Amino acid sequence: MTQTYAIQLENVSKTFGRRRKRVEAVRQLSLEIAPGQVFGFLGPNGAGKSTTIRMMMDLVRPSAGEILLYGTPVKNSSALLQKVGALVEGAAFYDFLTGRKNLEILARTRGCYDADRVQTLLVQVGMADRADRKVQGYSTGMKQRLGLAAALLHNPDLVILDEPTNGLDPAGIQDVRIFIRDLVEKQGKTVFLSSHLLSEVEQICDEVGIISNGRLVQTGNVAELLATQAIVRLEVTPLERAMGLLLPNWPVVGNGRWLDVQATREAVPEIVQQLVAAEVQIFQVMVQQQSLEALFMAATGGTNA
Image: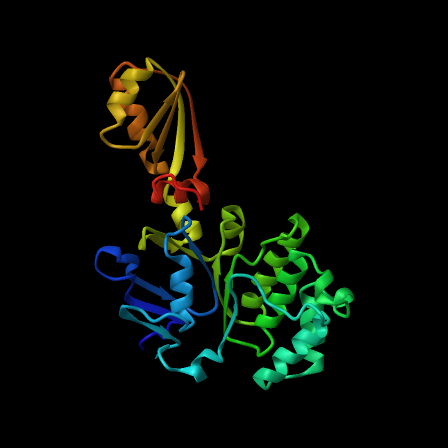
């Protein structure tokens, strides 16, 4: 039986401008995201993340390729987009109205107003006690919380979140982390998450995709990706001989008497054997699991998210 993906991008490209001023923001991007998970979409500034999200929401049309949500092309499908809730580039509200009234207006506009659901969402995002204050007195973090509630008013199957923790303090970030996991684990939704907080993505997401210069450079299950690579730290002498021996096969960084080798755990015996055979003295060996940040830096050439 053919699987229906929540999100499917098939060789999607987007070019802005003409002739000499052409900028290829996204290049032949292909992704398949199964329903019922949190997918993290990562990349440096200007890598094409926002353009990709806007194409998924049919706000920008691809120059080439096709985007499907639940097996149906996004193009000209307003009914399909009713299955999507989004918090993108910050939430916009009427400052002179209360948070609750803003949600009521949005829900009525979408034809889905339910006072009980509004109250439930306000409780879930931690805004129940501030819902009846005017939005003009809200902090950035409070507006983000209200934006999460707004994205879920119509009970969408797919939730697209672009930097949902902007303006939140550490406690607020933890609240949103738990909230997002609950959307998937308790409500069966699919969440497409773009964030620059790599430690949070590592804790929240089931799978990630890393984009750089408009191209997908890494994708896969978070736990599996992190398990495949490790940092092997060795205290050795002479350092130069050890680096020269290992560099042809592994990325190596030397610092004083210490050598950091990016390799799999399975490669550790081979690394040690090669060094011993070359009469390099080894005083300590430590294996550290790679973080998502280290994986990101390696995939994007050391560019920050």
